[in-house]
Image 1 (spheres, helix red, strand yellow):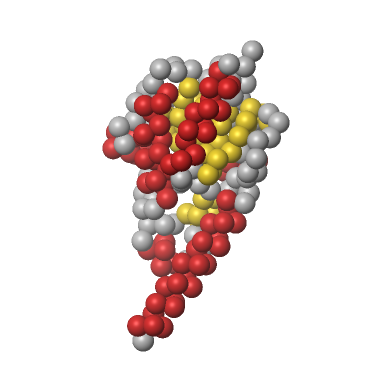
Image 2 (image 1 turned 135 degrees about the vertical axis):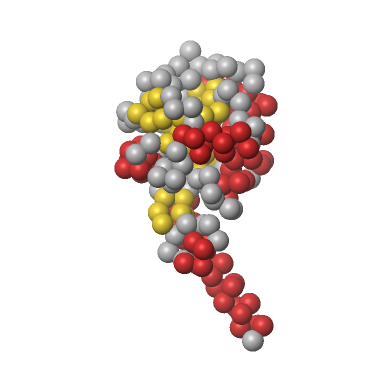
Length: 201
């Protein structure tokens, strides 16, 4: 019986990995020519507007999380928390965490979430109408998120399957690179790419 239960757990785990891999495969894994993001208008954790226009002149990294996520979002958020120290002397560089559960993640919820992770002035948490968030995610970033079809995982809080990609955007609002946001060893490469953007004419 124990062996059978273990097999079920293993199969569920493999199914979850396969489902998550589907979303990871949505984004290119190599550098692309600059690709402009569409216009967008959303709100940060302070209730302030965030748009492509307001970010013009900034180099920024985007990731995609939700505040009640018990798994990979914790890793993604901790990575951004630690990365703040690397950009503290680069005022033109920002971190943006977009909620894929905006109906729950109001500005007030994201403000408390940001405080929990010691978010500084260069880190914004972004929310807004769900259709606007998902349009930007899917049509702009070429990534995805969707309800988790496994009710047992939903019961543990993993209600949304979503990308773990981190995206680098330049001062003109153009996508410049994608990274797997979970491994800590990718961040020296991210920093190198940011420095390269800062030195562009």
